[in-house]
Image 1: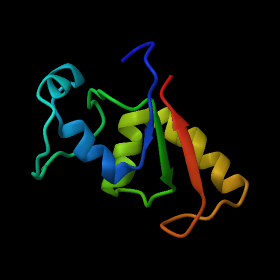
Image 2: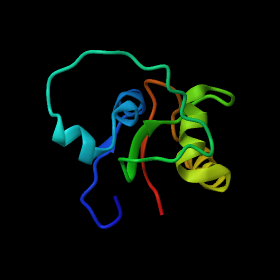
Image 3: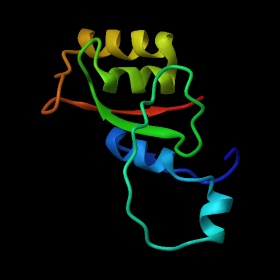
Image 4: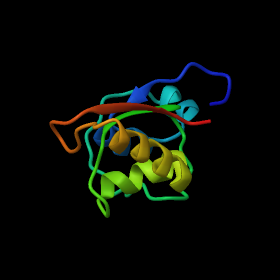
Length: 103
């Protein structure tokens, strides 16, 4: 979706959004539906939709941290988390949040 407006999604919404067919197919057959997904977003995942991610700071080894690593890479995580620790950010569900962009 290069050059197109994009949105920022929270991690749990991403799984559902990324499980949908490509936008061109989805718009051609727009209709209500229900379903589930077993999608795990891990490093190397080819993102289709969002260019930005709004998320908290997660525990090492968690699937949410794996999603963040898939989005901004290992080097990106190291930079963001080093900054967060240095500045005294709070971690986990009731902590601070971040807005991360894919570049």
